[in-house]
Length: 179
Image (cartoon, rainbow, N blue to C red):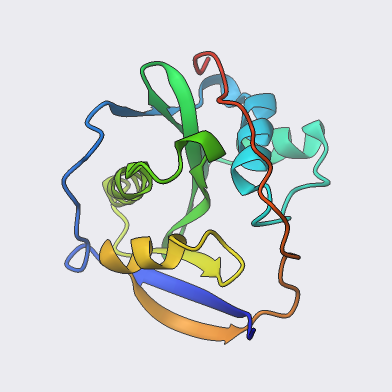
């Protein structure tokens, strides 16, 4: 199998917010720069799909989250954490990072709702463009979700170091509220 990496972009005119199948999805900013929560969600959402930040120390997470152009968001359903995303603002626009759902919540239409919420939040900053990266070793629904949400592939290239195929660890739903 040929592994590919994709950069996708969305402009306000291209964005296609989709009707929610889970109107109960709430998006909450992480307050007080809770690095432990961000690290846990990043790791659990990305388990089996990405390896970025695996070796980051708690101090490195704190430094990253203190940057004024970085915001971290938690998706909740009935007070339970179901996923997350991070936004990084720059002159070019806003990049969506670490986007995804915890394993027990995949396959329920929440990814579509989470992408709509992340994109709306990114455009709320005044950005003229939102972009993200994905690859063939990401969740199989990732690329179709982005394309159906109005994102367009602007760059495609060979993926040099794909994540080794492994069964995605079944993680229990995270408990608690964001503080």
